[in-house]
Image (tube, rainbow, N blue to C red; front, side, top):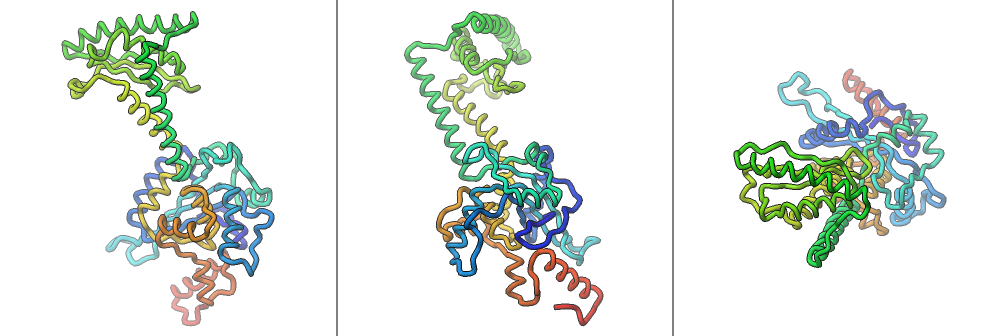
Length: 396
């Protein structure tokens, strides 16, 4: 990870390197997924929009639950800014680097919640913002180009809501059809749009029927983009004029538009391998809608893809003074933090079975006078240099 916050003592400036944004996320995520499969371990470090609230300053007499309750308030109020993940690998045997130090491959992601649970708000502590700016954080870049994330719990709830909405709409459409009610345009401009579109559909269907019989289907017909109501009118008009039972070869579907929520209706000839299939039914249409909406939902999950890969890898995870990191990771990528500390610990260990905190290890070793990240790194680097030089009096 490129830098640390003041909660761990003096900090280095960000190292040179490309921060991962939405534009570079796909390639970076694929590379990280491949590396996680063979990593010896990974180091994780996060930066947040704040690390303190009134009444949350730790006290020596705090119980584990009391300390957790204070930190839970902080992690629930603030959010992630950056998340660094660094994989470590041993060089392959027989290679040029065999026997050398572990190979580190860092990934530094700008991240921001895709759909804040408390609404569209970001809580930013002024002192934290000042510190992060001093470390080179570009907040404009963070706001404009961050990789979105949502928690596993949020993603599951959003997927369930999609299925529920589509099912409710399908039920309403079925009731409407049973009662003989159909969507039809009520305004002159809407009627003109549908009539003009249906003239194009009739001409295309006539041509498609002939060409389909000869084994040379025509190019699909894409109608102009329109809103959801007009698409319903078009679907109803097409179904009435060209009943599915008599047009098993005909597929009607929606295509994404240029923006603003509009979509285009496209007609195409069913491929030969689908020729024996049932005509496109309302149930099939509902299934296609669910699939399309869930696909969009997965795209909005963004960094959740990386988290799932990390959890699936079951690789040891290293943090430094990392309780806040784990709290923020839980809130951002697992779900809202539970009130009991024991439930938090169980959830983290279920996701990351092996977590090592290098500050705790350094403290318990008794070998270092200062276990904040920077001085600890300098002390360990001095030991490594002395070992490499064969100095028998190296510091311990």
